[in-house]
Length: 191
Image (cartoon, rainbow, N blue to C red; front, side):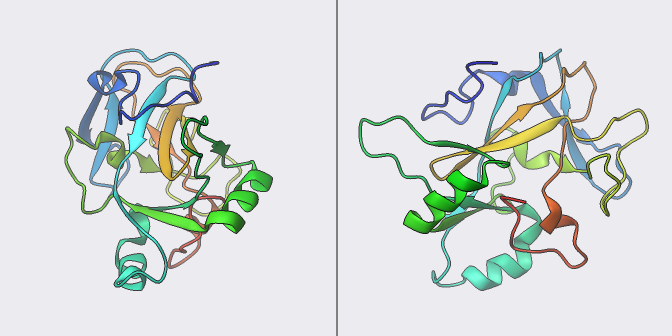
């Protein structure tokens, strides 16, 4: 568990992608989903959720937010100085998120145009609501809700599992309260 937040320049720092496979999701109407090909212990760093990065004010940003919102993470930017360790923010760490976004703003990571199963498998992790019962997709039969969580390292998005995963189990994340609001929201990252 101690190494789950240690990332490097690789999108697959622990080689977990070899244990992941895109298949038809067990969630009605979801299309494709991501499944475990081999058992994965709790707190395995699954890798980076890759996508095109943009910031507000950039040409076309509002159109991207409107059209691609269901594939976009809003990431507080904690830009480490050269030679300094990356700042890691977990979603529940609102203080660090606020400090970084106040200093450096946000970057948006849009995975819709980066749709390769081989080079961006985490794009296919589907969202389900937490067991708290708020609006959202219903987890597939036999699922106990989300089994994947997200963290941010500088302006990158990483996934790790919060429960052990068995072979054939679908990976599921709660995208945050903003995602489950009717019509979506651009406040997806911290929520």
